[in-house]
Length: 295
Length: 272
Image 1 (tube, chains in turn orange, green):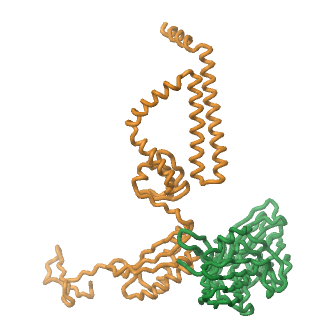
Image 2 (cartoon, rainbow over the protein chains, first blue to last red):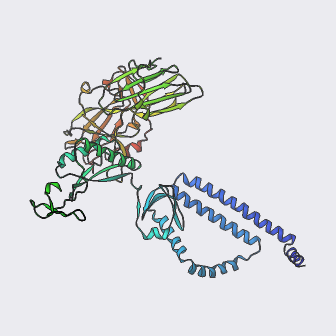
Image 3 (cartoon, rainbow over the protein chains, first blue to last red):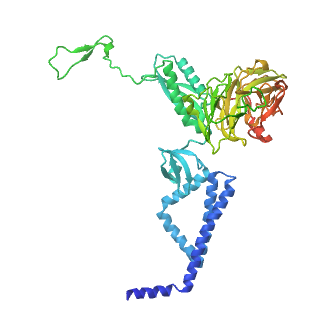
């Protein structure tokens, strides 16, 4: 009985005309979706030849959204919905949704700023906080990164606007600062010449700008300095690795000591022995002394 | 096994190697082996570290076997039916080269002279009559350098130190290098300090002299008052001292006039 009522109601609603109208609306939607994709692809092809990948991506999205907007309006129109009423309702809805989606709105506006400011583009390698990765896309709400261990990271645009972003691939060449220390007995001029020679022998180290040798001071265990060398952006990692290996080898071959931290226990007097008391052992005589040379 | 080069004693040219044969060449510091395998050509190399090495050796009989340490620089090109023909072709560098005189060089006003500079060559290996490219490799890997007014604006180049010899007979002949004659004219009222010169090697061609020596076009550089850069002009061929030459390779890239002007701004002096 119940089943019969439902059947009766549905068959009353889905008249042949209605079904035809709905089929037309769905067809418009499907064809429109295909058309939007085609138009977006064609626009990307044309624009992509003249602009960057990122600009082409933005233009593609705009073209897609524009065509899809028209298609959705046509879809609703075929279904018989009054667009004027719908737009009026949308105004009220916008206020309500606006309060409910402050974060999304903030991200959206941040996204627009990001696209206009262009601190980085698709394909750049950037560092945000502790995350470093290649920019896959810059969207209205977030940017997508691929980290070097192949993780997908989504960073909200609002966060990017607020925090410091480092673009590692903005300039064509990049410097590597090697922090080093040698023993106090070593001759720094000799060390400098050795390092310069090592950089000259490595084809990935740029001859210009010249490497820099900066003495940083007298450290607790070593004479500390910084040796800075430049490389092409794409070869930076390879250069950094090879320079570590070659500098260590060059210093070893020249007999120059790279010291590790030393701790010297000193009792306050040059000649007095260091008193040692053995606890828990068999009965002992007076404390045993260590001379400074034994420390 | 033949050397199809029209220049006797030159390392470049066409070679016919029978299957199973490993041929050996040493061109300057670079040693390499080419093996004609069953269904492949195999290339293995051992780059040297002495850019002044003048050695030129060749063994097409398999008398110099490939050492195990050459495996690191090896690559293979596979075929259904391997052609017997392999060609070695010299190329200019794939980036411009910044040439710095070892000793700073000054040219007084009104003077003009020619400096002879030798630049490093690249080796291109092609296989078969249709010259399918196997690989390109520098015969000595020069250091990278940056040529520009700042670390933001400029271009990646190779660096080369030169003795900037004034007499051609004083320039040692090395098989892995091509000679460029650089004519410098100082039309300014002050001494001209030649600190570094950018040679646009990708836009230059290679010419072979009768003795097998490789040359590039003559380059003329004229310095006038009030300019830190100097316009650079490429002539049609090497200087007369090269003798009879023939072009053996065109430029890697065509240079439109505008590009040349842009490339040579900030040609001299400066640094950062």
